[in-house]
Length: 414
Image (tube, rainbow, N blue to C red):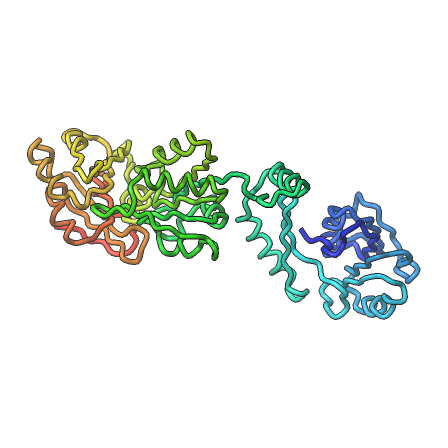
């Protein structure tokens, strides 16, 4: 909202005009608790229909005892008259869209309880200031009213460490890589954090969105190369939160899908830390659609099962392969790329159908994305045509992908 930032105490304000521009100013002046009087020859905006408006032509007698005059009539001659008489009558002047006749400019302001952020373009581009105001409003953390009341109380009693109210951890799903796949909620969270603990699959575009002064910590866990163990990450999150920081745990995809969200959230909750969990776009579904695969498809698949081929300590999980012998749905297998040969070997051992349509969708959500479509028995060959990270999709619905539009490169084996 636009308010008069110089009004530390309520002022007497005269608003000239009752059109659209005047309505915008009137709405915000009323919210600032100032004493507003409106004068206009006629009402041109419905906002004023139930408001008290003095319907008469303006004269200098109307500015008596006014602290501020706002001319929203669009009459430049009137603006010039007011400008020449403002010092004599002792009022500050703002003429809408006429910067040369202004003692002050209205600012675009966003309020969050007692927190107030204002944006100004010096009167040059009010709508642009409002646009920036709206962006700030979208990412500004919504602090509860008692947060500010507690700060006031602490300041009153002379506490120096007034902002260490106890930290918070946000477990943020960042999608498969591109900033385009961030949810609005995730974007707001990312823009509000002071410390970011970042997984390997979080895209550079997203990391670049972090606040300038945000502390960035790489906690990647890749196969055979763990910078930190899970319990060490848990302890880091706990310490930073106890120190009063707003911590973002940035995870690729959706944290609820093999994202260790339980280990971290449960640990923090048990230690009295406030935790917020934010879903992300899962690579399982983003990858399918980008590669032209519709995992649920009438007549081919009425359901989806998402599994992982990777267990703790880099062990191979093959329990799901048995289901492929008579599986009427689509199987999406995460972390399967490195186990291609093991999957084929196990499938042969249990006599699973090796001609099941299958696809590797690699480097999801990037310009290097490749979709390789073949069959279960040719996974090793398919893996050589793409790179990790990749998802594996198995099922009759995969064969129909050739009819679908797709993103980036696609290879279909004969």
